[in-house]
Every structure is written in C-alpha cells, then in structure tokens.
Image 1 (spheres, helix red, strand yellow):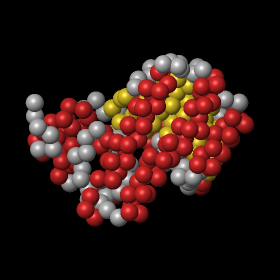
Image 2 (cartoon, helix red, strand yellow; image 1 turned 45 degrees about the horizontal axis):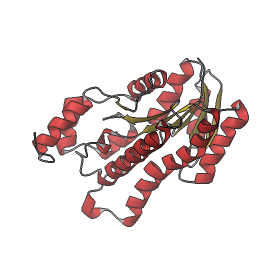
Image 3 (tube, helix red, strand yellow; image 1 turned 180 degrees about the vertical axis):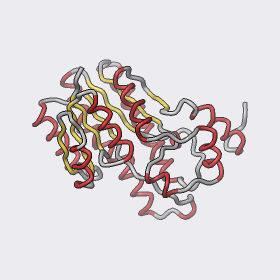
Image 4 (cartoon, one colour; image 1 turned 45 degrees about the vertical axis):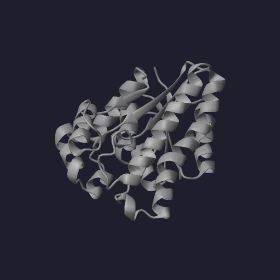
Length: 251
C-alpha cells in the first residue's frame, strides 16, 4: 500500500538510502534537508512521486513549512521520519556551551519540531506513524568522545517514549518508533574515528551500510514496533562491552 512519507536529513547517509528504498515501493515521498543541491540529486534518483523541500530542521518554521508542502502536494501524511542529525567528537570535560547547544538543536529540538508539527495531523486523522532515528549510543554510551551526541540521542529517545505513552491510551492507531542504528558507514562515522570500546564494538557488532539500516526501517513501517535496533548484534555486544569496560557492573 502506497503511503505519503516525509523524511528529514534526506540528502545523504541513512536518509538518502531510506528515500531510495521507500521509493522502490512506490511510496509518495517528501524529502527535507539543508543541502539543496544534494537533496535534488537524491530526489532525481527516485522514480516514485517525490517532492524535495530544502529545510533547516533547527528552525521550527522551516519544519512546519516542510509539513505544509507535504499536505499541499498530497493532502495528508501517513509517516513522518525524523532522521536528521549530526555528530560531534569531544569528551565531556572539553565540551563548550556552543557545542552542547548544537547537539541538542540538531538531534533533539529538530525532532521535537517534527513531532509537534505532524502529530496533531495524525490525531485528526486517527492514525499515523512517527519514526525517530536515535542511536545505540542513546542506550549504551560506550564512546566517551561522542559524549554530547550520546546524551542528545538519549534525550531524543526519552522524548519519543514519553510521546508514545501519551498517545497510547487515546490514539492507539498512531505508532511511535525509536530506531537505534549502531555503527553505520556514513561520513560522520568515517570522520569521527573509533577508539577504545567503540573500536571493540565495531568488531563485535559489525558496521552496517546506510542501505542495510534503510531496509530495517522499511520493515518497521510494515510491522510497527516501539523500538528496534537496526543491527541484531548491537544489544548483546553493547551489554558485554559495558560490563567489560566497568561502565556497569555485571549481574
């Protein structure tokens, strides 16, 4: 069944792979990202109906404009995927106010703007599916150099859970999903480097491609779940690494 799907952060990485994967199923897509030229290239590579809307997701008005563009073109939205995000490689004691603010703005507030823009529409329709792309580091902060990124993704995951609880009693046909990718071969992963427990995690879990993550997300749209790790090796591997590193005590 064809759906109208909005994807943020769609100009590269997981977002671009997801747009191409969902386009194969003839879904009608609305793609948002800051990099207009790259976004247009992704849109041009998709045979399905697609609208590309240059969007700075750190600005609430632009996220609302993305929603309005989807409604103007297709009349409704079935799925909204908050995928936009950005990483940072700085340990806790070296973080600046500006760096922490940036991580919250890009990884948390952008998704909040998306949630607040689209969920009232879902409530009016009585159905819909919200997907927030978080990170395995939200559950297991095993990479201290990515401290603020991990913290921001943990905040996003908590907000997602709270929204799910708020909607469960009154709007059971609105699904809210947290997606937890592990190590993915994106520009951020390549530029950030891997050390210590993160290097061990790359061996224990393996590194997924954006296309592999997109396949998992496509599956969860067909069979909604509250949370999903895109790599089935993530949860046991991270638990073991946390115990070995002393971050938690083995029980």
